[in-house]
Image 1 (cartoon, rainbow, N blue to C red):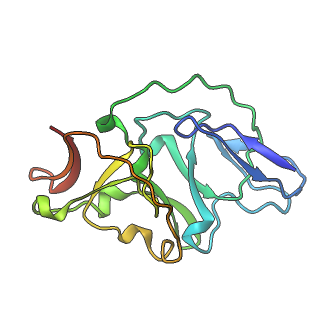
Image 2 (cartoon, rainbow, N blue to C red; image 1 turned 135 degrees about the horizontal axis):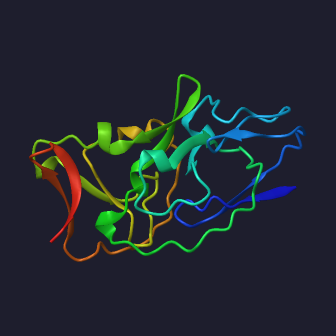
Length: 189
């Protein structure tokens, strides 16, 4: 049986398979407890066990770490019905969702903001502009990141084959090193 999750992270949805574990689920502060023989919400073995999900019913760009959580990829929302208004369009420079990833650290899914450890720079040559933080770049012309390292992928992208797509970078968009913060950032000229 498939259960649709309506936690519209970036105003999208997802479906995951229910394991039929039974029992009841309850949550505190938007964090449902694992139940029955269902996997615990945050337990993991490898990074691919984890995904970024909304910590609230609805999350739209720009988001912060408080709006998100890292959970098991096979976690089933105990309350899949969640009415949300459509997200308002924001500019490319206002988007932040693409900077958050889920990693498995010490057996727990952990939310990571890649700007903290993977965007240090000393000059503009240190910075890379790419569409999204996934193994494969997005093809919709939005969600660009500026980073100095792709090490946040770990080994999760070693076996991923990406489809070829052409998504021209919006005019004037680039990755530059902010010399006041020593961090790469996306800028529009």
